[in-house]
Image 1 (spheres, one colour):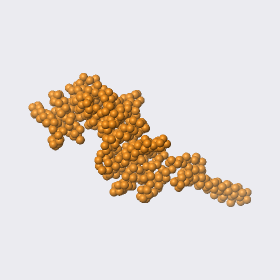
Image 2 (image 1 turned 90 degrees about the horizontal axis):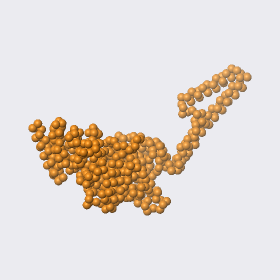
Image 3 (image 1 turned 30 degrees about the horizontal axis):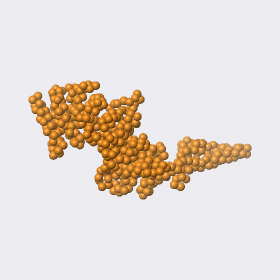
Image 4 (image 1 turned 90 degrees about the vertical axis):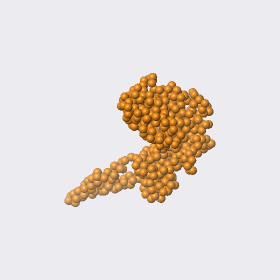
Length: 534
């Protein structure tokens, strides 16, 4: 620290420029000496004076030429340069020392000694930490057989990701390392635990310590989100984390956490500690794939509704939508007679309306809704699951979700994001005819949608996500068989249904497959018979 303070002081006071100024003064004194000597000899020996004048002129010309060729050696200009204000405050002194060590040392033992210090310090904004990150990444790649050291480097790199520093892209280098390390859950678990402990301490601490513990909880949540993508570390505000991030974790014994272990995050949201980390907390909550413990379900649903409000930032709204979508299996079972304590029809109606609000994108002309592949995949999966319940079907119809799905039809048919099955499943469960805009099953779009849906069903992984919708899809397909044959889609449809049947037959021992298997088998036989007759 003392060494770094001296080094930063030298840079702040421009010691190198000051030393260079002495050389400028020496050159000026030599010039004056040459001029005075030449003037003195001019009156005595003109021939000698001529030699002195030429030598002095050559020296001046040589200095000018060297200064032009080597701009970093332009002492006169350096002397006139203003002082640089890069002296770090005491807060950033440690990060300055760590940065200097990692930029100048290639000794693995030195890097290993410095890496644990990185998560304990703050870093100045906008500083270029690319060299530091690369040094850590290089050592990170060499420690796959040293788990503890590997974890140390991983946490140090994640801490840099959440700091306001500049880091270059090292995607492929990170990809190779993280793909070789399969236990990323450990990093998520440690950050989750750190955040939980800090939050508990903040509630029991005195006023002067409470803010520090809350800041520690925010930092830990930000760090946890960084690990959301399996193949590399991300910036915590990267939108890709919302749609593709996976923050599920398990204990060191391999057991998954209980839903009660997420209760503190619901309290964190309810306390409204920090708008920026609300999205982080929601992404962490999405990992439990449910509505939480019975004691917190009412509070959790209430907070989800608030976070999907139109006045919330898009990142918070989208993270809340992701959390609702990941809880879709449990949410679809919340119906009359099976309501959590405190939850009622009115609250579920508010949640249904909030889901539509969460889809809005803020643009210059005001709120607008347009096709967003990742967001709409999340939305359609949610509506597809909720539509299993007759109560939810009625609620979704009443709040405009069917119209929203109809508005997505053209984009879904034109896209390559495998959304046809979800949309067809929704329309099979909720009749879209008579809506505004109108949508009739007799339309060519419906026939294309059904054909594409069976194609996607054959590729679905995992199968359990679509198997319960197959009987409903079979009924909807049968209603429009004449139109499908008239449109020339019968050959493709027969082939796709055959693929689904083969897939189900490979899973015939599973109880959930038996109903779908007989239904699909009957449709497949009818299609083959109709194709043969035509």
